Length: 187
Ligand code: GLN
Image (cartoon, rainbow, N blue to C red; front, side):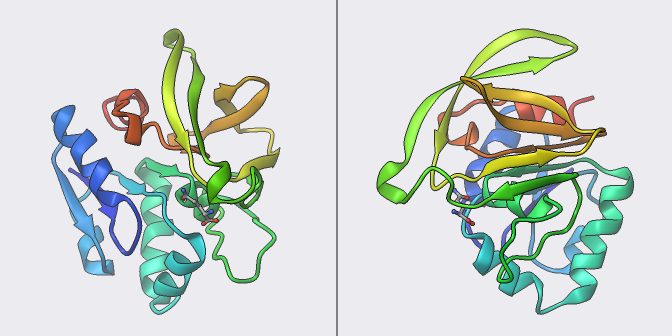
């Protein structure tokens, strides 16, 4: 059972992907909802809004952090921002689940959003192309020594993994790509 943080944003598309790959899911809106899950997805949306909602309950934030000690977390776009160590913005909560620094809205405004192919690099999988939507996406500006690259768009690093956690700046789930969910939750 994988939880999907459902405070704001596009959590529904992740539920759909989990259904597709045969993983049961549950919406997570409160600390109590974290019980019984074996992993968590932090979806895209607006990181400032999600931060405001999370910061209403420090115990919920602590619960997510302690879940991350032994359960995998997958973050897309705003989810990656929340999982990062620093996004250099006081309005945003950084939970420091993956040792990366990020720059928000680094490709420009909503009108500069685009769809493109990204390349997946993983030790167990031959290099593979996936489709993804970049929607006011962040860029990863630095990564710690234990962070591994998992996806690239041209020469830009757009997906990373640290231990069992994965974070990506774009949205493969909006293009019905299931591979990252399978890698993160089906091991
Ligand atoms: N630009 C948004 C933010 O900074 C993220 C956009 C997204 O999740 N697609 O939170």
